[in-house]
Length: 104
Ligand code: HEC
Image (cartoon, rainbow, N blue to C red):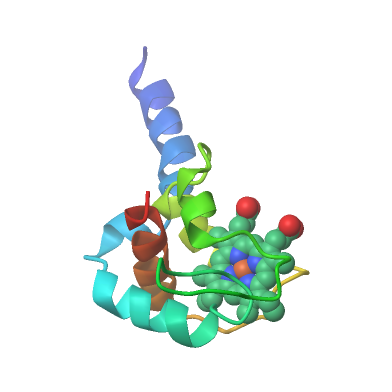
C-alpha cells in the first residue's frame, strides 16, 4: 500500500471512531445525564421500572452489534426524528455513550 492510500484509509476510519476517544469519558456523569434526560423514554438502568415503551432500553442498545460508543455519541449529536434535540455537548454525548456501552 502506498503512503497516500494508507493516509486515505486512516481518514476514512477516523470519523467513524467519533468524538468519544478524544477525551476520557465520565461514566458517572453519563449515568446522571441518562437518568435526568433519557429515563422518560428509555429504561436507562437496572433499577428503573416502566417507561412509555417505544424506545429501546439502554441495555438493548448496548448489545446492538453495530453501535459502539463512538457511533452512539455521533448519533446523539445529530438531529433524530423520534427523539427531542437535547443540545448535548460533545463531552455529554461521550459520557452518555460510554455509560450506555458499559451496560453490556
Ligand atoms: C421523547 C422520548 C425519548 C427521549 C427523551 C430519549 N430518547 Fe432515545 N430513542 C427514543 C426512541 C423512540 C428511539 C427509537 C428510535 C427508532 O426506533 O427509530 C430512541 C433510540 C435511541 C438510540 C438508538 C439509536 C439506534 O440507532 O438504535 C439511542 C442510542 C438513544 N435513543 C439514546 C438516547 C439518549 C442517550 C437519551 C438521553 C440523552 C435519549 N435517547 C432520550 C426516544 C427517546
